[in-house]
Length: 478
Image 1 (cartoon, rainbow, N blue to C red):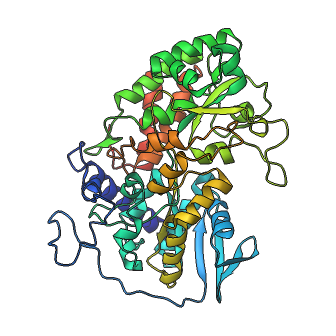
Image 2: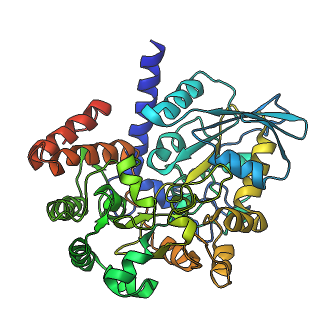
């Protein structure tokens, strides 16, 4: 009975989030109306004293500041955020892999891997049952599920003022702004994507590994596909898999996944299917699953046969660069010899990102606020994260300043990728985000793989997609 109630509760949350995201106006959905009015990053849920609130935006509810809890309990799916806290939050002292202290307060990390939706299942169950969670992390694909729920506290409830996060990129605030215009989370990351390419292959096939030369060869999808034909003629794959380009196409749709309760396939996704099938048939790419060994083989030795991948800063550092036991790039891999380069690619997009949320059960609100301030607002700490971790952080002035310095990435052969990230992040459009994005993105790619592999016609693959999404969300039609 409890599990049935949990499923019903979270389904209702997702329906509410999607209604807010669609709102009958696909040009400016309701969940972004407040965010669009933020101007310099001000939270519309906490208007200035003496200023009458926007009638379309409800003020954040009053929440008492609760402090002094016995343990600071943090829920996450891997150790990325833990490493950020351990390495860059000065007040934290590690005890072991899942415990630490901040001053006199013990810290406990509850880490549940994402596989099989394990993290969300654990988080949903414990939030519903009122387990004492202080801080939990979310990703963009399912952010609305939690942002539009009572389980997350407004940032204003932690005593954080809008002026403190005014330098953060607007899209990172839009993603975690609820349907009433109230900000519910903060991130230390910005995740605009670029195209990472193998420098040795670029030199052989295109005559140069210079980013401007490569960009000219992939400046739009038609040119990208022409270059893919050159790559296959030279014995290389343009990408490792059709999955590599999916995020780029999907982030540039003009309509959301769900419109008025009906599953909607945007024209740009239809173009991804058409272009991908053409590449598969021309043997310019393959159909490996993302994160599989076959897909990631192109990350390894310098003489691999994959030209490019798409991803944000965390991707080049954590995924495309295998590490040895000391955390250094493995000898002989492309990253170890600085064999990757970066350019914008055919279109800009974003991928992932992690947001810090305070749970409604939080009884260490002062500590959560301090972690947010240090890791997402302190420009010195954020600059340190870039230098130490090759990340791109959520502070526009700091990133634009570093883009003009002599900062370089060894993995990228001494290139400074920050100007590319700074350019791409300002083009991101979150107006088509819905609470159903995770299910639709996963099931669409899975169904189309059957089509690419010759195991289904396009119509059969579409039917499998619709049925799979409806199984997860029976309230939707198509």
